Figure 1 (cartoon, rainbow, N blue to C red):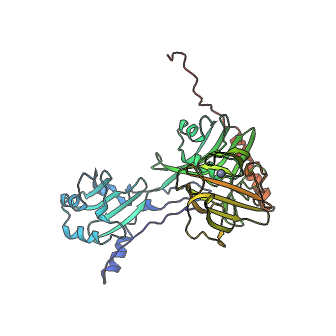
Figure 2: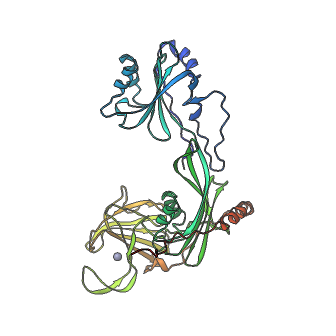
Length: 432
Ligand SMILES: [Zn+2]
């Protein structure tokens, strides 16, 4: 996980000037470029005495807000503010920091003009995105730097009944659908999101990232969640495993939410045909057993190895099309059929990790449309993976368990207390 992003500072100054320039530059280092983001603590802002924006003392400048106009070049904008073309040329040499040819139509920028008789434009700040900006230093030492606005992390809660899909239910509560993706990742091993049902409920405490305290920029980490699926409540609590320095999700008993196997070989898609001893084959037009689970998805969708293992075979047969078989241990193997193509480097003998992309959905071999036929072998016999009680990954380390339980209990109480909102729309009486 990427918690810290570095700002890039660049200055190309030759000869003796360099020493002088560095002393000068250090006064202008933007104060708001530091992102204090750690997994456990919210961002802390130091009190700033001078009123600054992008590290520039705004009391000394007249600031013009504008957006890049149609056909407008960087040079043309600066020319309007009396910046000489030699300066524009010098700025263009910083193309590894930011290439001025690629300013985009509609993006905002600010020009800082000194509050004196000359009204010299000293800085132009171009806003590349909500969080990232570029500062052009137009006088004295000419240089370009990129920075990031400080992100504040806010804690948020949501709870509800799943109607239609988790994605839709979250959207109705004005929660970013990204949260649905994050939840599906956490529960990938324990809950089959392909079988999530109408009426299942969820409670979740999570983080959202804001800039200037008000502008939403993204969904952060999920702190805790519970999903009630088919009458069973599955908890997940984020906990830092200090032994390995990794964040893992554990349930209310300290069991890892990860399993030795993913529930499905695709992140999204739908089950189009389940394992059965008797089905009418859509291509061969006859009754025969279907010993796999078909997941329909658009051609090209990545297919994931459901567990760590070694590729036993990556080949082609007229029935299977392009297929990969992975041996996980002496008991389990899995097989993935009808691939459009193998992922790069996938061949017999290659080691794969759980969740690693091994190929792409296609319709090679006997297939009516793009899907992956997932076959699960246990002791040499094909079985229905959806009916297997699959082994868990490692639980929390025994010496960490007391710490974990103490950490988890108050969060669990908070989670359990969240009222479940049912967003189901009641049929309106006045409807014709
Ligand atoms: Zn199949």
